[in-house]
Length: 247
Image 1 (cartoon, rainbow, N blue to C red):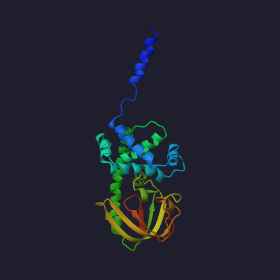
Image 2: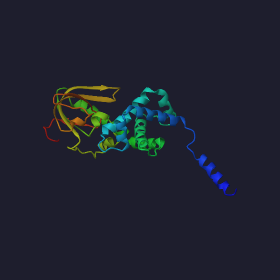
Image 3: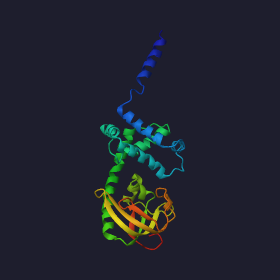
Image 4: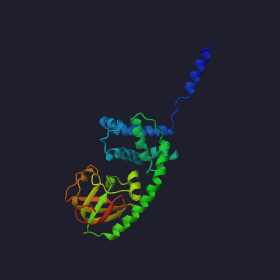
């Protein structure tokens, strides 16, 4: 009997250390992960699971985009995250996408802790957004329809808008144009407009020259003569046309 008591005690302790009942937040996370499971094909999920080095930034970005789309179309789901202090739509989709990758890889993750980490990182990004908007205003004043301009941009920034690392580097003035990955376009300014209450400043360019990295922009194939709209207040630099070299 004496030997049996420690065994029974161990069983009781083990039971008390179980995961416990799921919370409303747990069910909300599961809903997002289940939707992502149903969105991606098995092969794509396998590549995320093994962190395939051939995966592009845009493929990883698609996880965040699908998570955000679900939140924007399901008010009750978003309400659960908001009630738990996770309601910032700049932060939450990124936190969910990162945790979804961990979930696929059977890694431990803590959504709330990761959300807090991203919030701290996002402070300089928000400051950078203000700076980029101010620069965009100058672009609109300095360039007119018919001008020929050069646009250079970090890899993917022209399509996905704000990536934390890109923005921090860009506004911290540590970004330098890399001919092997970054984008360069020379084009004629066809149109410019401001939308979404000043949040989106856009230039429409007709491309007359570009470097060899253009196919990475949203996976599109861009040809000479194409007309492309760029979000000017994303991390891009625009300057007067200066020939076909790197400026």
